[in-house]
Image 1 (cartoon, rainbow, N blue to C red):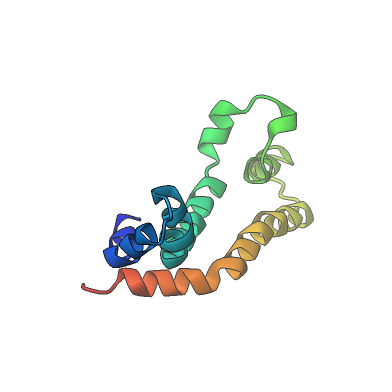
Image 2: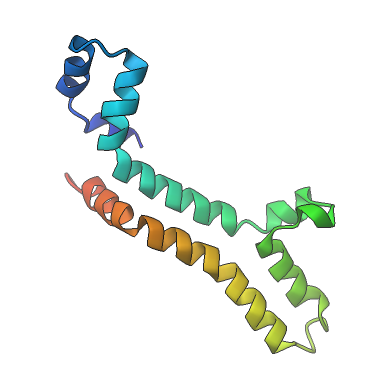
Length: 124
């Protein structure tokens, strides 16, 4: 994220300050829209890392009301027939439930992610 915010020209912020905007308002109106692609990349990758985290959920969650979809997917494989009898219909349904939110997030942020990844590779 630091590189994305460092690539925002300083003169844009200074021009906003000269126009009477506060530092917080200049950040919200000038800097964040310019760094939007980087924020999209970090948000998408952070979501994927948090979504796939099953071990932490096994440790932290003890209530059935708080169970997440990846944890339910893991428990479906573990409890439905053990490792000897696999119910493929149930596993396929849980796989679809597991993949749909990731696909929605990717489709919503794909333009920002591509632009952000291209912008982050400049200067290599």
